[in-house]
Length: 445
Image (tube, rainbow, N blue to C red):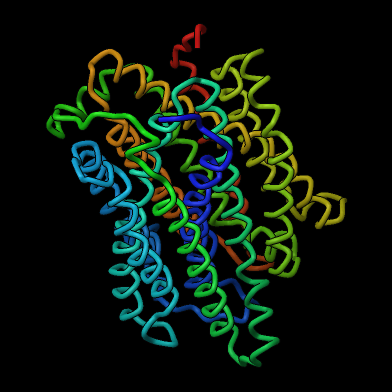
């Protein structure tokens, strides 16, 4: 296997950065692109039809895509766990998925009709499912490599840190979509804002694909990893995973956390432009500030784990992030410059996002490795697949809930729905903290 060198960690993290660019383009821009606020220079592209008085069409489309993807997760996890391919259990899946993921991400923002139409809605629903399935075929095997590449607790923390650096870098890059669109518009003289934004997205998708290829073609799984294929059938393997009390506490907390996170991620551009009344290009500055500030905390996570343990840090971070989400209600209402308010908001969020980005993958790697020692079977892919199944349910409901709440106001002077999203995020983060209190930490680790 050899030592987990810095170069190997960087190769692994580059794939996470590429995947992060793709999924965060969707998370940040999808509601903004199809249901833009007034004054954005974009036009509504799908009908705002309500179902049962609360569900709008975008919420249903997003939920359908994520749910179809979530059902697919355990199958791809099990397939990679049981693979006997000559290149390894994970790498072939990662390589096959890159091109479809890039193409589908581009197509999501290339609706067939230039105006509002039901045809755009059907198109979005179809391509969104194809994108999520392609992206999942990459990320679940990639995550399953973490406990196979990193054997010791220190190595898992280090590799999870680099993984989170990659994910954070992807968020920053995705958040520059509007800035890159400005550049395209300036250089090429596009009259329509939507055209410039589409070219920006294509540029970022190509960059994401290159980064994903660095991992998929740069990792020598046969030499760097040591694992045996699993032979347990899918349903018994899932049942066995949920019999582990620590795993149940982990995934339930993750569900609530990601639902809260994607409510806020979906609303970021709205908070900047509607609540704070700032130009949309500022969104990249705020996102970049938050992520770069969180990087300052990364070297402190290891020493803090030794002093306080993983459980206490995770619970504290959930509570702190919940209070920060609740502060969305006050953006633009306080006797303080709105830009200053936004900078305080994102800087305060940087610490909990750092800990919640690094520690959960390391915790799950511990759970998977302990179970492998107990049973003699390596089911890392299935553990991460089940995790992502639950996470995607949370993401789906988070994006859907955000889209639903926009019914109650998403425009300047009519913003109640946006402010309620912060209260919902706070409640879900506090629920995640309560769930994780049931986790039993192994002090010897």
